[in-house]
Image (cartoon, rainbow, N blue to C red; front, side, top):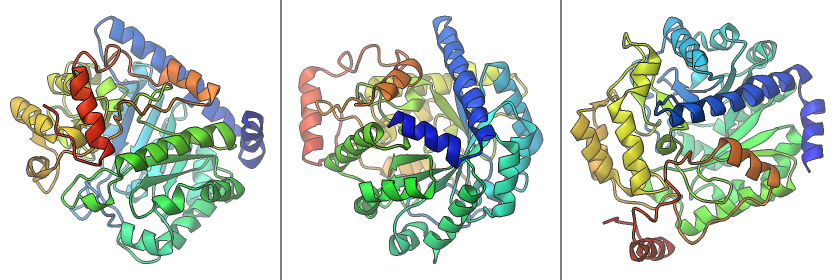
Length: 425
């Protein structure tokens, strides 16, 4: 299976792009992780990967979106992005996730990639603004992988994305990427309305046949001004997703990304572990994209290694999240997050100005933390990769047992099994 995946990468994509992936993302990414671990041992902090939302605008109106996509367009200008990327490179970083809104609505998004040929960029996109000209320019840059979001069949996509003909237009952009031999991925925010269509072998096989090299299943989070909680997955469905991902990794010649589990199947939160933080279109430095509060900005005059590394708000978020759950604190304990925001006087980084009220109105919901139902990796390769580069970095100090007594852990497990929102005492 691994040999077949390697053959696909070599013969279905531009070999120069494969080399860029291996060097900029693989070798340099491994070095970034090594430097991150060294910093932690010295009591210093700087995340080895950063996600940057470069624009708030979007041409779609997705259910559950937390971004102010309908507000007046705001972009991070090139000089600010250059400074952010350059100072991150000084810390050893080489990989950046580019988000929006829709990133291709930023007028200079392609120039960002071209200005930093020694980095690797993963751009999260709905694909509708990608044509052959855009795809060809990404191929020339060689250091970018488009991750195209597909949210269901024609009917489901129109409902999920809030516009007509979404599926066909997204597939047109996906095909433009594949025609130009880009290393292309497909992602899906799995929810109640699309899980039965897209969490299937048939869908995976179709992506492989098309030439898609990797996929990423996110789990729908009920956040933002219109959270649509009816779309949330049950604990049983989340286990089903995890099992499918583990099985697909061991049996199909396609890469499968996940951000919620280590190699042993234990849940984790990338923001709690310090693996990554997020920069908003206004330059606000947030714990993660769905936590829209900040104390610091990339526009602060201090060097970023101080702005980020010495942030008490980010530090306390990591400690609070890791001491409260191995899952998502936003879903499980919005009350604790609200208290933290008020304690630090963190500003609401949204245009709508209602993020704190949204937190207060949230119900406690189950996330990926599911004690007693851990599903370890079947694939030895993925298990090794996660051991070396994607784990809790000691954030949970050997597990959550020190924070939650066994009886409480069992109560949580039983509540999640029954699909009852978990209220942690």
